[in-house]
Length: 135
Image 1 (cartoon, rainbow, N blue to C red):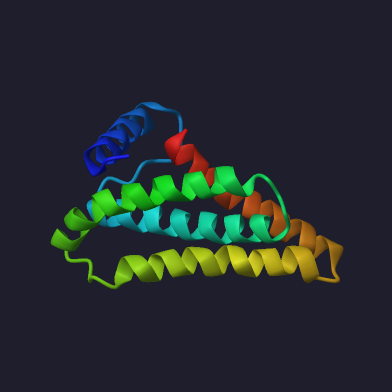
Image 2 (image 1 turned 90 degrees about the vertical axis):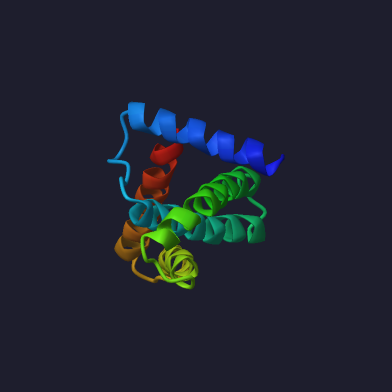
């Protein structure tokens, strides 16, 4: 995919997002970059876990992560113009990764079934929030 096509695809996705019934789409470049980076991190952690377990869904999850990475790449210049420091998008992405990794740890290794179930529900909710932005 060429860079122009990917950016055009992002623009089309944003148009759909604005019209769809989804969580409120961030208005500022700063907020968009944060959401895209956080979701990219969340999906990266989930895809890594899925791949390690042999779950074939890791391919779809990786594709969704790639879409968020592309949208982040398209948003970063405007976010930097808004005053976001260069290193902050990476920190947001890492925070999304850590959030899901921690929940996956609770889901897989907690001896408390309630805690494990709550972690699974939290993962599903966070991934769904990200998916609603692009579907």
